[in-house]
Image 1: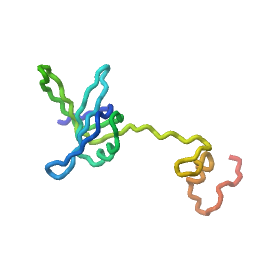
Image 2: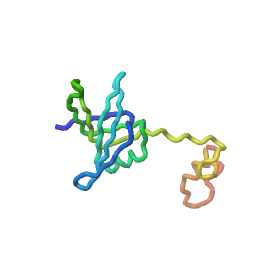
Image 3: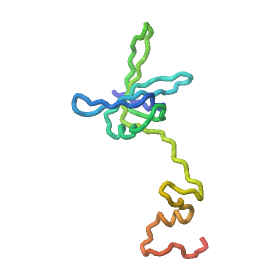
Image 4: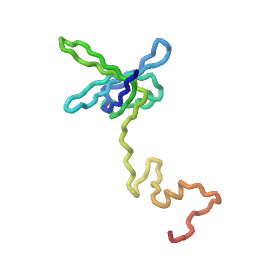
Length: 139
């Protein structure tokens, strides 16, 4: 039987990728997950190239979610019993903020004014006969 977990939190530090004995790669990172007024720290490992691509370029504090099989184990630290939480991520969803929309009249990064309204709609349609799509119909 396999236990799966879905966790959401913030990246602690930067992901580290290392080679495996079999010639593959494994990436490790820590995810800080809020649990009420406390934080849990999950050790995450992934062998998936798509997950590694999602993690590329992320910095400390980046919000993300991951899911996969998990394992919890007890250990002793300075006489105190603690729980170590581990997950092998099969899927990662990076919760990146959306780019801000351009204000009308401002230049877009490509140098031209951003099309809006009808001009944007017309430029995204393929018109087989060429010519204008403006036929002066009242709707």
